[in-house]
Length: 104
Image (cartoon, helix red, strand yellow):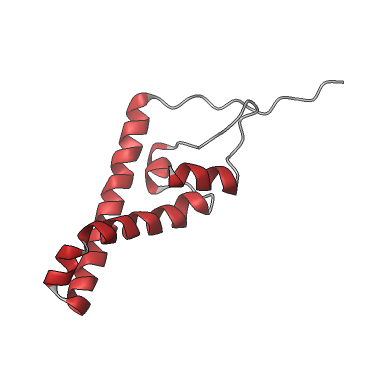
């Protein structure tokens, strides 16, 4: 007796992937603006200007920790109805796979 194959997900089209990335970029930039504004209030503009790259990286990291690493879809993936899958029997990626993809 053969085991039934899990349902195959259709591959996302290029416009959906681009739109998803644009939506994620919109939200990470919004988060960065809020973090920068908060840091300016606490530390002043000069220090924030020196730390701008680090603040951008930190806000991106927080966004992807709250979504990808916790195995939740990003807001862009939700918007475009995209699901991350890996392997031949298409399944959602594990925590380790998500961590590797987020670091790279």
